[in-house]
Image (cartoon, rainbow, N blue to C red):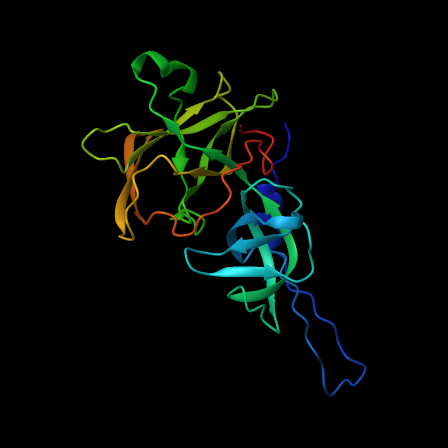
Length: 247
């Protein structure tokens, strides 16, 4: 079974910080190297192969130590470990040095295909794990989910249906097709869905309802949601850069 990078991140987060002691023992200097992510961002490409990071709906980060995006012209959601630096680039909210960055599976939502088209998207259960990465921001719904994974190398198929409720355009549904890989060990993965099919909230914050099938039955969660304010790339990366076990 292929190991997910997510578990590597969790393991690193549990490590102790590293310290460096100066030559003067009476004046020890402690340097903290954070191996864990301190932000969830959207990596947005700009002209000349440059890029910036969208931290939330209103905060932008300028990377001072990377000139080109490792994801080319693709827009992706990513976990990042960064350090703020000075001076601040006047075109952005903050300037940062990127210690490391790792993209997660980033996909567009799927307009509800009707009952006749549902089968390929599956209805295998998942659990939504309580975590700081579960958020609706910058036009995306990002989720950490948990299910069972076997050791047969099968990539699970996850999607987000939009337009499932004619009476509520902000109701969406998580769908999971495990392709029969349902008897393995518990494991987590991250995914981000672009919400560009939803109606513009016109600057207002509304309730976004996520429906999903859990291992104990049908459940729902609500998120605060406001449509993406600034125009950005729509060239969404569809490949599972964060985990080889979901697509």
